[in-house]
Image 1 (tube, one colour):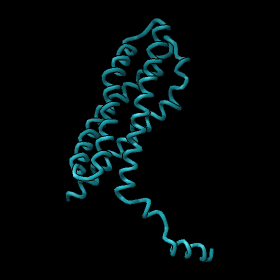
Image 2 (cartoon, rainbow, N blue to C red):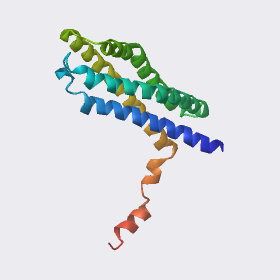
Image 3 (cartoon, rainbow, N blue to C red):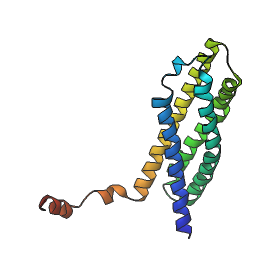
Image 4 (cartoon, rainbow, N blue to C red):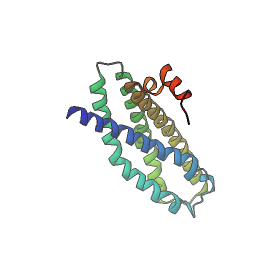
Length: 174
């Protein structure tokens, strides 16, 4: 039972990390690369509902990720993988710090309504920069977790064929 719970815990970490980094990659490359075209007349409907919904969603997902990472740290504490678990925890903690203390206040100002184009442009530029920081942090976290699962499962060894298997594949009939 303990093994199954750890599998579910670790799966949730990877699910949350993949989801979070995926949103940030999509934000960076697909959704808001044209943020410079937003004006005081059109930004609200193109920006506020999306950011509000994402904030509400990740307000549930991220605390559970923290809990799952604490479980990972505890279970790996006496192994060399504790550094991997701690690195993931640092990435998520830093991204959450940036989000809560820097991005959310900008979101609140934008949601209140902006009528000055210069202020809007400054706030959006700040918002994009701060999200780029989270993008890097969550990409690093995803890579850390990918390393963890690959190393823990010894995937490189399992994916590389032995000489006998390679010979068999090369000499088989197609």
